[in-house]
Length: 199
Length: 360
Image: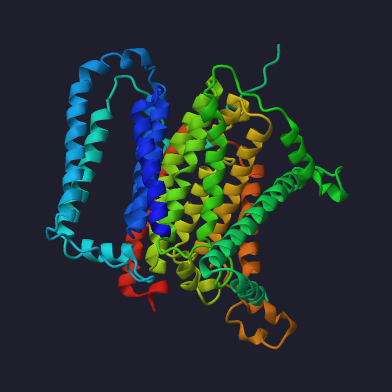
């Protein structure tokens, strides 16, 4: 009973936030609605006993991706008026996409009620079940090659991003921190002994 | 004693109410108690900060309100609450008022998974460490939104600095936590504390010494405290992201910052100094002497360790000048990150050779 109540609550917030993302006039508001959508879908995953994925969603998307997103949106001086034009031009495509997704959802629900063989509802896991541990056990044994491949591709992406943004300009002055730290007073100031001059 | 009181209340309530409601009610009471205690701690931490920094700088500090200035926090609170909240023209009103709440909420919500004394934690979550990491990563929103919604140059500059800094140090912090979970063999903070059983030398600060230092320093950076307080930088950008805030809205930011300090101190104590474990555990010659109570684990030990780290926060602030912005970035990305990754590899070797926490 409680689970159903929470599911309804989070699902409602999720849908409302998703509508907010496209309906908000201000791009920063849209981004914040997207954050809310991520957090509520993470709560839904939590209800499905997938706590690792739920927390990873918050950590990666809300904690890192959306922060950078927000950065970009705040820095851009977006002309919201020009974004508002052309709504009618894109409306037919939007209607088609909406129709297809509703049809897909409906077909799943209908298949279930038509008595076709569907997967049974999974049993609730016992309290000492750790989703994270189970996930790790599969990830590092059965799917280890796929996992390593994904890690390799991510590393490649990081290197590529750094290479793309690194430009060498002529006449660029850089600090050498190690040299700065190792500097001694003798390197900077030279004390010269001189005879005192008299007139 | 606390446990028997708790059991008595629970059995009393069970006579009138169904079990589900009793559980909800007792959890709510626990949450309220922990929150109120943290807020009171924040109030006295502000006084302590002014006193300690005062003595370090050969001053007396606040000593007018109440005996030895003990009522100063209440005077400050009343002043802040009675002041007018000014919302700047052309600011983004909703986000402007939402931002302080977004800094405060994660700082308080993280306490749900911190084990306070043996057998007590509000929510015994399997993936507690991940929860801590996820919630601390939410704190940055308050700062960014405050900076942007204020529609002020200084606020935006402060927010940009702070966001870059928090994102940078969060990675080092996350890697330090990976090291802790390798040593504790669990994501549950209670089990991590139990893995450190057996006196000072079996706490994780020794086998994870570099991670311990990296975590605490990153924590200082993460809370935007001196010497990493470029986000506020009074001498450069007035007060940074909260320059436009006044009254109760400013008080929220203040509360959030100090609640975050207490949180980082408590987390460092839990993960590296054994949480509620006693420092004298295993000193068998103390048995039968009046000092025997020191061997028992409990809330007292967690409080002592947390206070030590809070003192370090204040000590750092009184001692060091502010870091330059590019040096902060260099420290985070080029020093802390490689150190943590290296130490995770070293931990792998240690666990292979079965030394330290891996010997059992």
